[in-house]
Length: 186
Length: 213
Image (cartoon, rainbow over all chains, first blue to last red; front, side):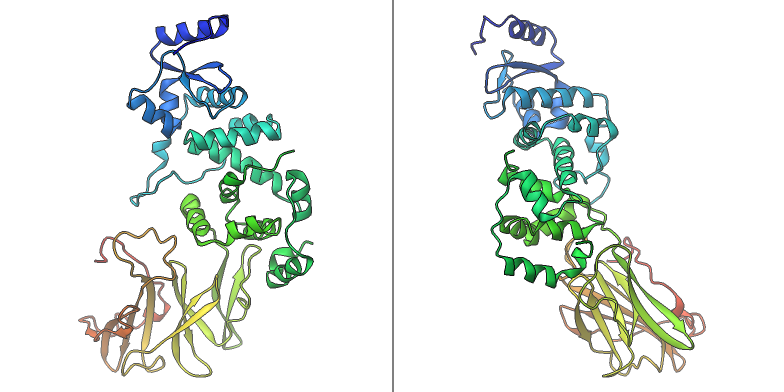
């Protein structure tokens, strides 16, 4: 794969990746290269784990055309911060087999990690986590968005997230009456 | 700002706290698409799988009030089915896997009733032949009867078993009701003396998974 030779920093990253087999190099849709711990990438992303196992990792930077550089930088940052934590497989203790580990509340560092993101960066990161099959990052980012809705009325949520109300007044009133217990505070 | 990616809204709604069901009801009023998501059967299945341990939304209890047995459903979070607080005339016997087994002791007469507190649906079960709830000391348990290993996250509308243990007239027996067969098994006489199980009405049932076939 062709790497833009004009970008000294990217070239440097490539050399480091080749020299150190503990990492893999990922390439964003806008051509920027990022280095991530191979162990953390394989543990946190089912898609990257599959690519590593299948030998389809490109030393010159594995193309991730669906992910922009800002989101990929956050993905890599998250993986590297997570590198020393407990393997997610250890969370699965039930004898019944499930597709995913059970949801656990984000840890303090994970909260801080998503709190600093703008709304747009957060949504881009949700999409990147979903694309890469990163269940834990999906938990952390989606939990953050769910917290942004907590304590807000449907009107306020529509305003914050720019969503169009397609209910009629009558339809809303009907649901409110049917499920009055959920609306005591209003 | 741009709305959350529509394809990923389900992922966001799945991370709402299970012990606060009112929050999900409230966000379903944002737009019809969110309502369809939250109220769809696949969302409920995924929600249970993701959160695994079901939240405690309330409990049924029996209260002895001036010699009268009163029963009540007490909500422990903001959650309430249409007339969940009103189970007068019923006595909770057992609860497991999303089902509550009630004894109805008033109009229109003695019966075992299976109650789904979330949907507030009740299903009357016949009593075993030659059994009356007043002529015996007895207790009963309800459990899931799904084939194979069941996670018990979404089986509350599936097949179930009721196990009844009773003693009276010098005899003790056990019999089971299967929802698939919709009948009671023949009673199995027990070797224990009736004295040994005469207090069974006061004992909470316990499901020992490894022993059950």
